[in-house]
Length: 167
Image (tube, rainbow, N blue to C red; front, side):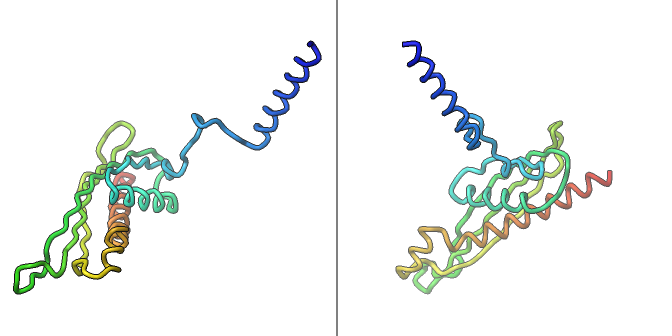
């Protein structure tokens, strides 16, 4: 009986050391370093397009060095599709897609560093063929629009941080 307990204990210690050696961490101990990259924490942006914009922002912020101080970025995305060119029967033939972002950048003291709006727009044909419908379903037409919007947001952040460091 004692021998079985000691073997069980040795087995448990072996398994523990194996997991520690493989750098396996418990799920509650995960750290998302890319989300907090460059000391700018990006709040989650709701919606499908918001999640794509969030992904672009996190990727761009990870790749550039902006600041050593910590900031929090909140972006509200307003997405509109407007009939752009009308046919003689009054049906839309082209659509204008406008993505507007309300950008709020705060420091850790909750002081607002940047509070502004920026937008990007694009036009496209109304979905008529099967390939257009598939492109629309997977939002492939709008990724370039959201990527452009993310670039604009990053440029606004660069200017705001540069102005803050001069003061």
